[in-house]
Structures are given as C-alpha cells and as structure tokens.
Length: 299
Image (cartoon, rainbow, N blue to C red; front, top):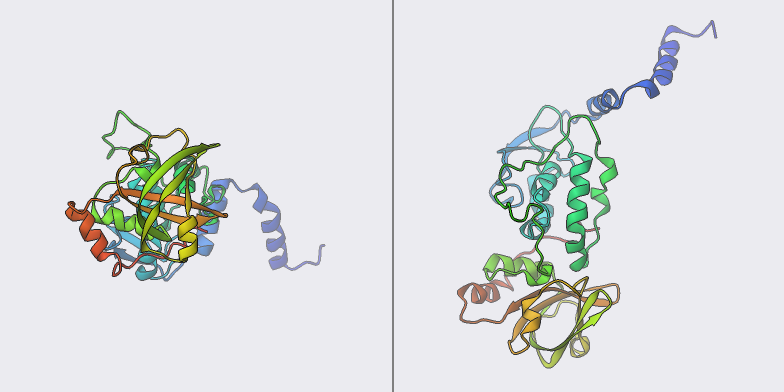
C-alpha cells in the first residue's frame, strides 16, 4: 500500500468518502457532472399549449425528458393538455412543465417528489378512467425529496371551495361543448360513434353501458363493423360518480372510447347537438385535425 501512486491514493480516498457526502452535495456533484454544456434557452412558443401560460417565459432544451427539439416537445406535451383541463390537481401543469419545459436556469431543477406524488395520487384515477396508467417515465421516486426542487405555485388558484381541484363528475362526462375539448377527446379515443344508450348497469366499481342497435360510425379506428355491432362500453371506476348524460337515455350522443385490456372504455360522451356551432365545427374538423402521439407518452 505504501508504494501506491499519489493519483491512485486520491482515487481511493474519493471512493471511500463518496458515501459520506450529504444528499445535497451528491446531487450537486451529479448535476455538475451530467450538465449538458450544449443546453440552450428559448421562449416558450404559444403552440406549446401545455406550458405557454405556466408562469415563466423561457424554457431550457434539452428538457428533463431528454427531448432535444421544440418540435419533439410540442408533439409529446400535447397529449397531456386534456389532463390539465380535467383539473385533477392544482399542481398538474407546474409538475408537467418542470419536465417538458424546465425554467431556463444555469442548471436544470427537478420537480419535488412530494409534488409528483400529489399529482400522481389525484390524477391516476382520471387517467385510468381513460385506460392509461401512470407512466413509468414519471415515476416519483426518481425526483428529489430535499434539495432545491420545483414546488407548486398556489397563488393562481381562485378555487377556495374545491382546493384539490378534483371534479366530482365522472371524467369522461365532464365535457365542455367547445371545439377544442371535443377534438382533444377524439384524439384520446380510438373510435367515435353516434348512438343512443339503451341501459346502464352497475358492474362492480364500473358502469356498463349498453347501446341501442342503431349506431353510426364517426371514426372507426381499429374497430370493425362486426365489433361495432357487439360494442359494450365501461365507465371505469364510475359506479358512484355523477354522469348526467347516462341519466338521459332519450338523447343521441357522440360516444368515444378505446380498447383496454379486453374491454372498451368510455373516454368521452357529448350530446349530439347540431344546433351548437362548436359541435358542428368539431365534426367538420375531425378528419383534418392532427392529433399528438399518445402511445409514446403514456407507456
């Protein structure tokens, strides 16, 4: 041991002392070692709807999800806009934008683990109602418990009656009659049909939706005509939450869904109202509307 070179002694000392570093010191060392020297700042474009109004004007690229171009960021972030609109947690936008469009500082700052866990716990039931699990890429235990991290800004919330932001209405039923919302629900669905509801049954924690025989395809996706005839939908975890549309069986509805685990899940239900300009505009733009890629985000 006495004949070891000075450089080797320094290396051994570093290895022995590394476990004794505090979490803060280790995180700072890790960030310094992995910092991307080619990182650049840019204005958040208006087309990046998820983060354009998040509270700061410039973002850093590459982001914390390893997206290197703004085109890639816009494509992937677009899939999450409907979740923010569902208001499942007041910190959803802040959390997502800290990853998709991190604030432009000398070093990237990750979201706090508690913020991730709060958003995950509040929003997972809504995501599951649409057939999506909480994705592996947002696993909360990879974010810091302590140290400098992105917390939630609550100063913009005026909702004092419902501080959690969670809607009591079943997520697929909580739909505004406007063009953007309808098209977003279309993008999150594999198929859409015009039909009436015959009856609704409680099936454990779900609601089973049996349709009338007369069904007009608006968007078939991977659904063939034989499957369309046999189609039965499930409102996941919807046994107890309100859904006004499922209580009125006289109306025609635009019903959207997707196949998940051998079942067809209800992802959206709108009253078929041709007197609504927004509804008519959504139907007109359906074929030309470009949807973001969902499969690469919810995995």
